[in-house]
Length: 260
Image (cartoon, rainbow, N blue to C red):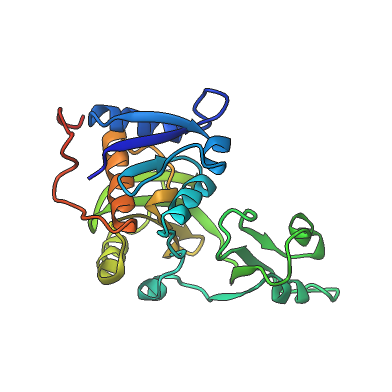
């Protein structure tokens, strides 16, 4: 059970629309809500407990979860979903990828952080100049590498308790949607190891295939068009699961009015 929601602000304002949507959702659920700024959490002036749900940027929420000993591992490419990748994806290090670009030519590769989320933005590297933005990171930094795939469109499916509750288009042609049966099959295949709430991204390739882009943990999800109460429910379920509390069949004992 959540007894308080802490939502991040910056200079007294919501830093992103995600915080505002979360506030709308938890306010509708009649939860006690307080606000904090990053320096207060960082310096220990904000008390965090398992029943205190923290909403904010990815690094901020991870900081709070680490204080509780509840920070999760990344779930970008779960083993259960490898058949849906449609390309090679492998764990490696930044140094290993850098070594590919010491000569005159190199095969393009997509690279994204593996353990340190948002260390840099995932991108296709095809020349030495593409490495420059990551020059300050050590060779030992864990990354994912994958074959380059050209996507026509990319979509996010919001999954709560193994059911898709919403979808958002975030890149490419909005009229080219993934194959729904492939998405349903993937959600079903992930069920034995899935968290209580997560986002699963699928894209349509230039040759018409529907393939998995990546999986995102619910604590780090933007709302991407999901309505406030369902968004708040996803954040709540995943927080409770991470801190070792029961995820109930309801949407919170403090609910006073039905969701919109």
